[in-house]
Image (cartoon, rainbow, N blue to C red):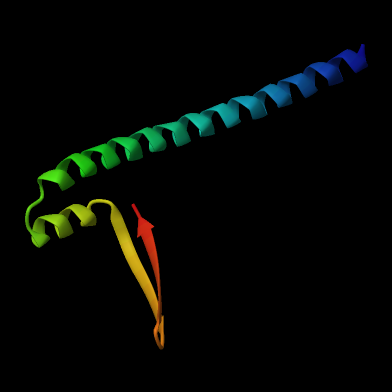
Length: 82
């Protein structure tokens, strides 16, 4: 009988881990959907932007930081998106 209790507990722990993974997946999926919507809106507005200021303002909605490293003639850019 004790063996049965161990099996049930192991299944419970497995299920609990699965539920946690599903919750994390749901949160990640929500972030991806929000990002896709932000990108669609950016592309739509980018086509309408006519000035450099409008383009810069749009870029600020998706870019968090831009890092650069300059070594003589080589420049390395790293872009961190929101």
